[in-house]
Image (cartoon, rainbow, N blue to C red; front, top):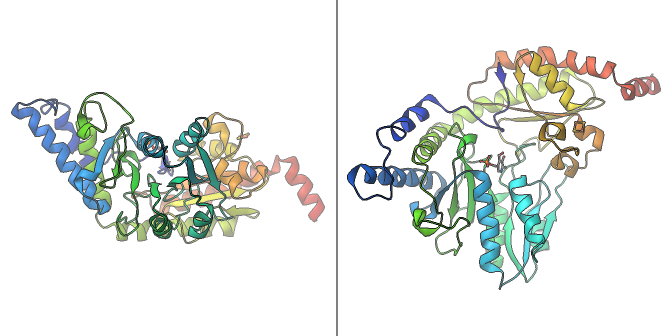
Length: 390
Ligand SMILES: Cc1ncc(COP(=O)(O)O)c(C=O)c1O
Ligand code: FES
């Protein structure tokens, strides 16, 4: 199999699994218990907290472990709305956020809040000026993703953070696609809250964390026991937390060199597709882009059909459109770029990982043009287009 869907999830690295295993078996004690064997697990969690904090430029007591990116996003957004509802009811976000941000915002709209969904430009960017222009006296929260999961566009986070700081507004970023892949410094970038997810950087699924700047009063999302200093109830997922920290540590080692390698493969694939396949469009910003993201719209075809053909050859990729996600609309992200419905439907995303090779890119480049050609030959739209242009 050629796995090109690392934005969906990544395999757990062997070293990560190895670090986790003892916490399923020998070290099974509940970290809240007072005997020694359990206290060892409390220490493992605190060590993991320090590791995660270190890689974000945060303090350990600013890190709270969660069940993943979705919980971290929900907690940050609903929690700040609850905490600041006396102060105001307006939230600023973008129209290309992950549903883990959009749906909490829509939920809040049903409960008396107002949300501005900033429109991105054709590359998927919002500017700090756009954010500033949307600020109202009653704005309490800005939540803007660090990097987009479908098209890979990286937002100007430090500039947006500076605007938020200037106006004294809390700034949350969904950094699920960025942590472990891009260098992050929450202080330099004026980030107040940041969501991350373990399974996007070779850690276990169902693990994540929320960074909460010290002094910020964020009420709990989950009520119950006193874990995570009374902020996130529930017996800690000790193996998961240990695995997340180990994975982040590994991901941040030689990040620049690994990114240079992945970027070279990415650009090889992008240039190769452009050279071989007519009527295609690269979605997302050409430079301000995650090192591993390739997203193309191929006119006159359905992304899903292409995915099926690729799958038959053992190539795993994904599309932003909807058949895969069970709804009928194409990707809200691609539509937000201004793509017509047909082009949004004809999109395929390849997201590379540390173990992909140039040979694998060559396999994709060898198969893809014929697949696109085959699907186009069955398309009445393409037939019509060719007739009109010949
Ligand atoms: C940008 C973004 N936010 C949030 C999430 C949700 O993270 P998790 O799968 O850990 O709940 C994802 C993962 O699909 C994502 O890509
Ligand atoms: S037919 Fe596939 S998303 Fe519409």
